[in-house]
Length: 130
Image 1 (cartoon, helix red, strand yellow):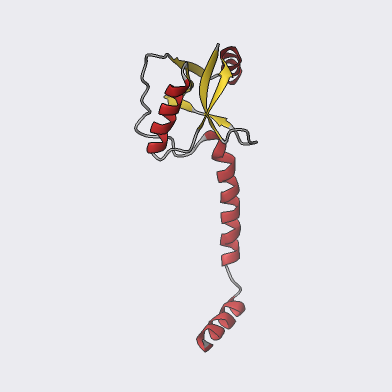
Image 2: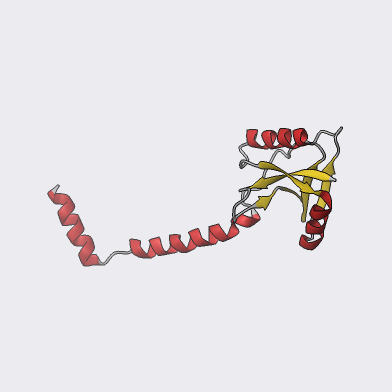
């Protein structure tokens, strides 16, 4: 059986799968029908969520992935309507590494901002000439 999932950055090195986080559980959401997955992705995008790609995957493969990653799986049946939560996570798990890199570059910028007093004085004199 095939199911439809929502992916971030599909077919890239930074690909991720959409999950719902309820308390400390990550739940992968899959859909029996492609139209339902597309509709859900559209509702997320209307809430200013990241753009998602709808992809088909083998249900057994997805179940094995969930077991290995210790994620729960929720397959939305054809006759059900799933509505996205009103609030989304501000920072995704896969963007934590990017945030750490930004913090390092921010610290470097702070160090650069501390000028030598002689250079600061010369800069002020040159600015006064303008």
